[in-house]
Length: 635
Image (cartoon, rainbow, N blue to C red; front, side, top):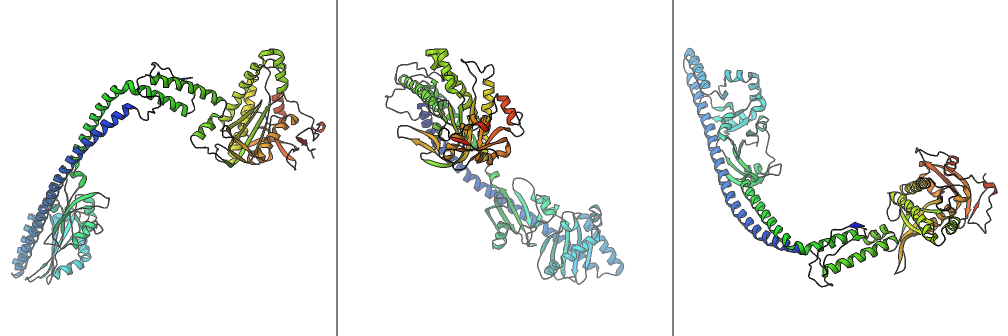
């Protein structure tokens, strides 16, 4: 009998009242709801107000950073263009000087220019008088050759033509040279070399103006190619961002600068601001992740939640201490109820008081004792499954395997008990049978079967009905395995018992197994019913069991079962038998063992193991009016 903690008294309710929830839980829930509503409302209101303030500040700061970065970028590009124009104008003026002076002035101007602007790789004037100047030091330090420049100019032919037509453009030259380079292409007016000018310069010049921090600033050109980006890999390959909704809307928007909340390709929400430059048809974009903006708010909210949880915990602790003497006994009874619901009917409940809780505990104890007795008279597992709704009223067709077993010579053994024990024979017979049934039921339940009923010394069980192993073959195999476990259990039980022992005789049984479609369900009256199976396959399993004595076997299966799992077993076919209710002779197979399992391999070895004498089937009397079977002669 399982011990349940002793129940305390103190619940002041009438006997007819039903306690649905523990008092302690009710109090904790009430205090918790009040605390959660008040603290939650305050936390939510404060968080909302702070969030709005921080949102406005973050947007203003992001927009300011963007404006400043765009202004610095425009200053850099404008200064770059101005410096290159001075150089080109100087070279144009030198072209009007005599030969020697012209060459000396041009070389001196170019050398001075590249010494002062080491970030510039090359300058080109493409028009009437084409001119290309290269910063040899820059080329040498970055492993650049003139062929790369020529290839780049050829690839940007259309951009140069657009510049000659009056457009200023900027292109990412990093993929062509393998180093961070940008190309500013713009038109030249009013000079002898009017046309297009190109300056190739290091993109690090712009990167330094954008700086680093929570706000990420990058730059794109009119084709949405990345020019400068905090992630250098994106700039190195000139990733195109034209598919981003924010970038598309920027170019479609007539406004030169704007800010809104957008999402990137990974779904992250960003505060994004842009400013389109007045030079080179480019745009500077600055964004910051929404989550980073509100990190402080979230941290404060978390702290408030932790504080609220601490308050709730302390409140719950005090309430628990206050309600312990009231809710303790109720929890004990609830625990006992759960044990009973789980099938453990016999509980030890000891009330300590004489109030309503004590009275309820006493009634509970009596009820558990009654249920314990009731559980022995019914199939407890089936009753629990029916209670849980897993088995519903009514019959259902099931492909099942049905098992019958019977003790050999039980009548004679009963008479011997009476002669040996006299008035105490009944108690001795029941004890002897209960020991046997206990071992047999263990074998059934271990293999997933259902014990249907005990009929005197007989056992009826079935597999694949209330629950199944997944297939008729698996259920049939489990049934035969249970029968083999019974055989092993009986061998163990019979150790030390001799055949002539009248007080504690050995037990020998015969088992019959058949498979087929049966009707399974709760059958009986309104006052009493049982979960059982009916149908032809059930009767045939019983007939198969009766043939064991005639055949000198302990386990027989029919052809229907053999067809399902015969390939897994060692069997020997017996002579066909004519049984009651069947017109055709019944094919019967004796089960020797499971394939590959240690033990007997032939029926002869099995009979020797079980001390069963082989019958002479040719001399067997099979009078139809006295027997339920008739042995057909072997061919």
